[in-house]
Length: 93
Image (cartoon, rainbow, N blue to C red; front, side, top):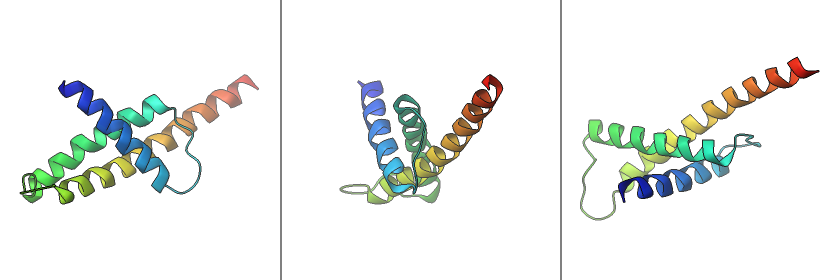
């Protein structure tokens, strides 16, 4: 059940990150989901390091850390994806 929640949270975080980043992102949905999952892991680690991993009620600060990490990771991976995809298209031509 833990993996299912990780995939769902990664999917949602990835989509929100794609919506926040300006411009068009070309990475596929599965890659966006993986980036969202990585953003959740990194955000949890940062929240734990700052000392806000566990709070009463909804952990808004932890979710913000997760979202910021997901935005950074989605933007970086999309840039790498486009650089790789662009090189492949140039080699075919």
